[in-house]
Image (cartoon, rainbow, N blue to C red):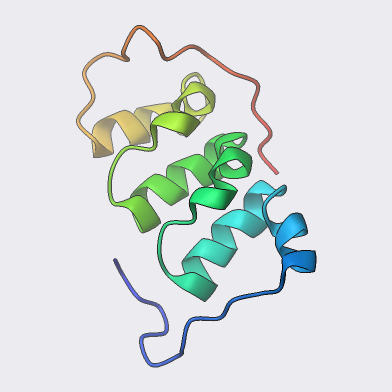
Length: 103
């Protein structure tokens, strides 16, 4: 994983703020990227609601496909780049276009 702040310790937040972070795609993605610098399973449901943050999460955090977010990536502005990056010829049959929240 590319570490933006390799010398900075990981930062964890209390449960009160975690409830907020885990419901917002942008906050969940940036918490994963900048604070814990690793996958954030607890925030993946929120991230998956946004094509933009699903795309970024797959590339910058997971370094692989983010199946949970693919339903919103499909049909979005990120679809072609995602398919090219992960060398996807055809979407799997179970990937259907979802409701995108591009927050």
